[in-house]
Image 1: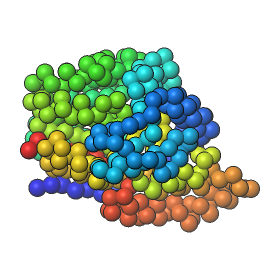
Image 2: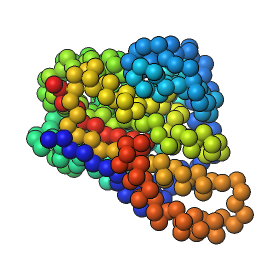
Image 3: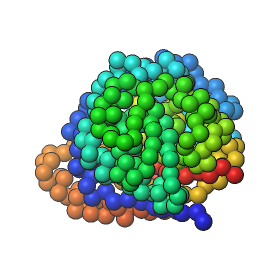
Image 4: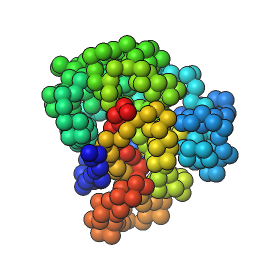
Length: 335
């Protein structure tokens, strides 16, 4: 029986995302730097999801145009996220700041962000889990799995993240492996029944190659955390002084409910667990808090809290329940 879950609480958004508020300008400049480099890549001709000809862009977001695929409903950026681009962003010396920022507040992020993901996985599968995690970053998810007594190995292309992450882990381990090599690694491993990509598939140069590798592997389950085309994109498009969290940086394309259905059908996968939740309302709150027209920030924030923040969870739940939120976690089983 399929398990469907909606929403999560955002009452501690200030503690978890305080860097978003404090360093908004720095994050904005970083996103623009990434987008300028992305814009130097070749034009995209084929959809990242169905690999058919893409449609013309209908929206421009922080220098980049994006269009909806008429075949599978996927949102595509107008340039290719080439090997050169992905290596520059994640594995090169330019990735040092990314690595440092990613490991800030490690324990807090494990407890509040990644532990619920491990619990969701355990609730859906209800069996002994042996997991191979692709694109593990600093090992946050692997640490959460440790806390739930789930054994796993993580593959991570960034050497700095791998070294720092292994210092945080006890039983589970990170391996520094290039993403291209990880495809073969997935195919030949026989000790895992689950493969996970937590906010990773959208960052791969060739996501369909990874899905093919999974289909060839002995693993039965696939756990994907995917960013979605949602209200947050329209907010980003209008609050240009606020750094874009959803559609920028390594997110050159976004999934939709339709494009996920296409992915499942194409790869002969059955959905056994879904968790729909987003940060659209927290992003709205963040954007309003960064308004250029504030005269007294203390009073402004109090009024904003009284009129929006106290109902932020209820408003987000409406989006989540209708599956028009900014993120989904899906657990697939091979048919």
